[in-house]
Length: 380
Image 1 (cartoon, rainbow, N blue to C red):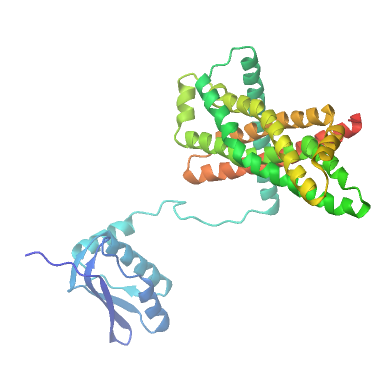
Image 2 (image 1 turned 60 degrees about the horizontal axis):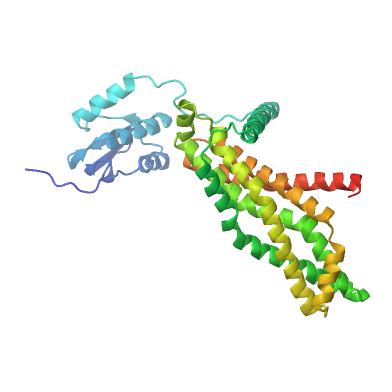
């Protein structure tokens, strides 16, 4: 006849002044769960006169390792309060397992001990970690430069179909978001400029502000930031997932260079697409400024177009194109670097993606400051 499993239960009975009888009922199994040993600890703490804990297991229908875990926790609570644990009422098998568990010594270091490192220790560890990160970054940049050199000489090994697919993802599929952001940025520049220039009756110079601002600075920066959040994050997620699945290790085992097979197509695709996206963003931004300038600034369309053509020069155009190429390289390297450095867990992929976006945007801002300073020194 099989015994029907019931929910595990726990009740208390004071046998005398210094004894507490714990009555166990039901099935104490992993599937059914088990009560916590804290209930017994609370009884002992609330009644300091209790010096002995016994068990009544007549109504215990089934048990497994969960009962043993419960008894070990009760034993630890008894040792803290100088209370005797009477095992006579327990099942014979449980008593034998308790004896066996007591005879096996606890392995050293099995319990996680929280230690707080000193200030100098944390500084040293941070310096070591920063040094290792810088070394990995420089090594990655060197390998990427060599791979790009092999590409220019026609010796790099990668699939042309991958390059075509990545070019499509970085170029045509990015046009909608680039169009929206560039249009709004051009309209914002024109709106702010029209409000201030209207005070001096110089609304026509809105065309100069939008044209020069978009070609020289805003189009490359906004396109670079868009690509960092869109394409750089995608690169990091793709390579990070491959790192987690050990696909990059498999490529190295087969003698295929991950730098040429994975990083090089992505870097080349962004180098080719970023200047074209910048040109497209220039046109859309100027169009957005024209809408606001003509509609709000009471400027005729021919006058706005003539003023834009007179203000914009090839110098502004080529500076923007150069920045677009630099930003494309930075976004590709940031995304691929964080993807290659990704850990072996699912959470590491998310961390790598976030780090790629942050690294890409910071790199773009720093590069913009450097290029602006150099252009100012050269007088262009």
